[in-house]
Image (cartoon, rainbow, N blue to C red; front, top):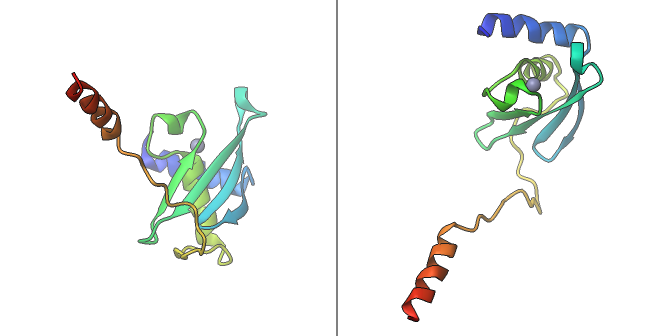
Length: 120
Ligand SMILES: [Zn+2]
C-alpha cells in the first residue's frame, strides 16, 4: 500500500468517526477503531505511547499492523492528535511509573547452565 493511499484511507476513518480517542493512561493514548467488511464487528485497539524524545510509538492490533510498521489506524490516530489540542503530545515523567520494565537478560539461563557444568 502506498503511503498516499494509506493517508487517504486514514483521513476517511477520521472523517467517518471510525477511529476515536478513548483516554490517556500515563504517556499512552488509547484509541479504538471499527473494522469494516468481513470484520465489521471487530474493534481495533490502537495505542500511541509518547517516548522521552516526544516521538509517538504506535501500535495497533489490526491484521495489517502485525506485518507492517504502520497501518491506517495509527495514521488516523496521529491525525486526531494533531487536530485536537487537548491531547498531550509531550512526554511527561510520571511519578511511581511502573512502566520501567526490568528485563532479565537471557544470559541468566546460560550462566545457570555454566554453573551446572562446572560442578561436573
Ligand atoms: Zn491498524
